[in-house]
Length: 271
Image (spheres, rainbow, N blue to C red):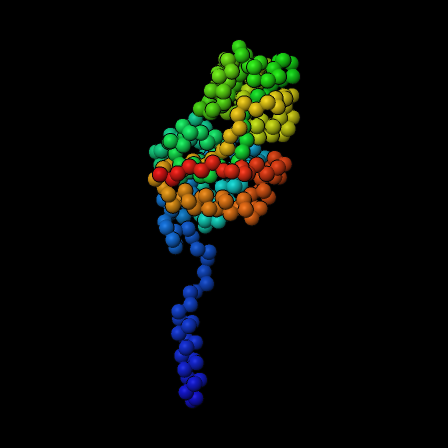
């Protein structure tokens, strides 16, 4: 046998032995820094499915919404299974600090106070607080809230805004309950997220109006417990890449009609 042919066969065999076998897509943590997850290979995420269009149930019972679509895409990019847990808004941070889940995806405003408690991923959506009312209340701006009965989601920043403008605050477990009480004439106005309020009025054909003057401009953030720098960095990387490559806009725009990604996201240290 030709000696050169023997050497060629030997080299080919060595190369085949050294080559990795084709297999399933690599899971997060197979290479690089390990993510600080409660369950390996799974991202357990707290959401409140009563706050459309951020998190809601479709007519068939499937979980959908702005945050759900974004977090599912983050999980896909990180090679993680998406494990949603339905939690009421006012209990979100308590459960996060108790390690009941890895992250919250609820429509939570990034505030300096909350940044001291948790490590928010970079701001993923820009919105703000707005007044929703009936046409017969005479409320046309923030000054008209004084002395009026105003509803807001409990544990949200909206209740504080209502009180700062002299309103009599009534707290609600869900934004949907507050809006229904407003329609029924039990309160005079609701302070709601601009995206959520606008969506509710259009989707549910409510006889309500949203006042143009904003009470605040905010960014929403996914909360992660401090001390998990690898998870924090991985979520931020996936989020920035999906915004840059246009995937974020393709997921979000069909629900609300525009791309609400912040031009300058608020950033929070991981530690």
